[in-house]
Amino acid sequence: MVLAVPVRSFAPARAQEDAGDKGGPPIVRDAEIEQLLKDYTQPILRAAGLANQNVRVVIINDPQFNAFVMDGRHIFINTGALLQADTPNEVIGVLAHETGHMAGGHLAKMRQQLAQAQTQMILATLLGIGAMVAGARSNSAGGAQIGAAALSAPQEAITRSLISYQRQQEESADRAGVRFLTATQQSPKGMYTTFKRFADQSLFATRGVDPYVISHPMPIDRVNALEVFAKQSPYWDKKDDPALQLRHDLMRAKLAGFMNRADTVARRYPTGNDSLPARYARAIAMYRHGDLRTALAMIDGLIQSQPANPYFYELRGQALLEGGMPKEAIPALRKAVQLSHNAPLIEILLGQALVASDNPAVSDEAISMLKNALIQEPEAPIGFMQLAMAYGKKGDYADADLASAQAAYLRGDLKYARGLAIRAKGRFPVGSPGWVKADDIVSAKPIPGQNQN
Image (cartoon, rainbow, N blue to C red; front, side, top):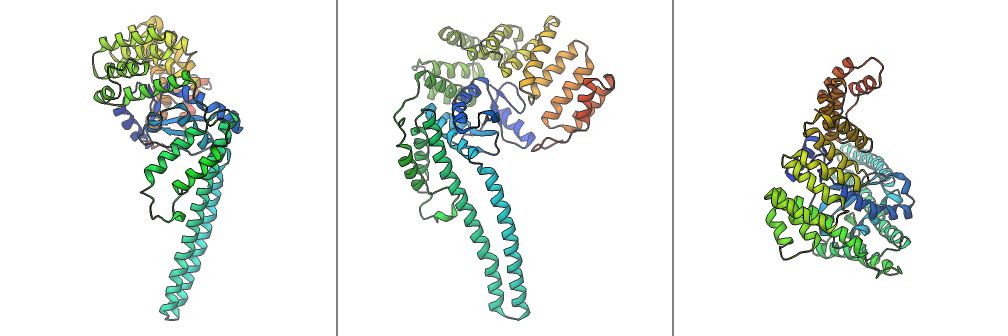
């Protein structure tokens, strides 16, 4: 398991630090979990007509059960949602709801509504100020009060209108999600179960609240409407495939093993539980918090149970790499790359092990491996950092400086990136591909949403 900011071996304490440096949320990257979420999402996207938009599910390291969309290319889902969802169908239902927002163009429509509301508020404010000025000039207290009312009343009405529009969008996304699930012969029960849980949790929180001043429909009303519509699906009682349920349980075990304390993992997956997910969680917790030798024996047991599972080999390689044994990590990571059909995040981990092995004979392999991974993961700073080290070991300082500049730029350190890129330009022939890439960094603007140093 690795991070996107930057991509490297997963450690929750560093996740918060990395995200904080860039001013964004901590993003978790993991080949196994991302592949599972892709498998969850692709049928839904095809049913919604969005299969060609390259929509990606992004995992946020947050314990709350939540998912949301911010554009037409990403669905964000919290680790809390993945950990708390008992079945694949519950996660798929949430993803179907968010896809409903994307398919309905709700974000663009909301921006239009906000722009219109802003214009209306400006006009309402100007009219209200005019009324207050007129009242003051006439020395009329009543006139001034009317002006104040003219300021507040239209703005309140505009706000209510916006919130009502957002509630309509949520209801529309619910219905669209059910349609997508039915079209893919999947049950909408998971979506209903999730929102029913939300309704139960917020029942007392919303008691006495004006239903016109909350952004989502009143929970019980929304759940009742969803239940009626969802139960019309012929797949309401359809169960998840057992093999998919196992992958789901392994995903939750992996998250728990990496993100929870050892005692929490022990309570959630006690030694009496001999299931594969429980053994997975305990093996991860053992290597992170206990004895590496014992952890490796546990991981070998996992591999024996599923010898074609690339992620068990990945775990073995990561444990050895982080345990200071990069040479020993290489065979397991090679196997993981092969079985995963060249998953780029695992290729980066293998590249890191090759570089750390200090074996000049594998420098070319490390460079080839990392360059191939970065074609698919062009925003992975750790990949460029390892590539820079591999070039440096070969004495190729021009490419080393360029790769270091790319890593610094992706980390948000624009000043340092430009300095390295200027030095790289001096090493490359003028007009060569490397020179052009370095020149692009010298003149680059900050990445949107990043706090540049």
